[in-house]
Image (cartoon, rainbow, N blue to C red; front, side, top):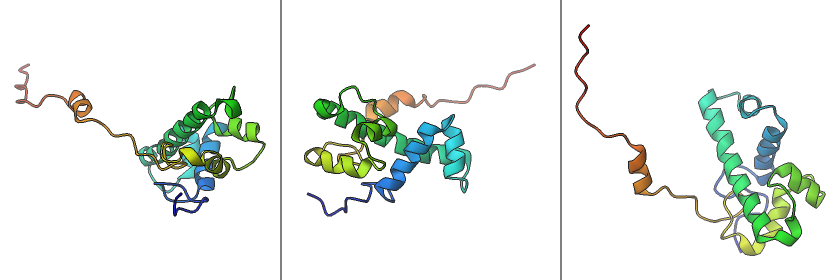
Length: 141
């Protein structure tokens, strides 16, 4: 049980319908950049792409989790908004999925569920960081 209304996205601004619209727009576009240009023309391309990809990653993780948790209901269904809409016969699937997966909300990723965000371990960050050291001497031509 949560105090968050069923229509609002968890840990993202806006509603589930708005998040679903972003994902559906990307699924129907020729590529992510084209969808990002349409959805967020008010910010630069790198910001647009981060904004769109964050929503894509979270929604696809939740769809995959629900498909895995409920194989009888979603067997053979791809983890996409379009496939889930077709499977359930609805135009707005995320609000319905929140109701269907109510007992799993603590494990599902936002914006559908209330599970924790994926944490990056300090060891992973160390692997990504290059070693600091003195600057290389200038080359002599």
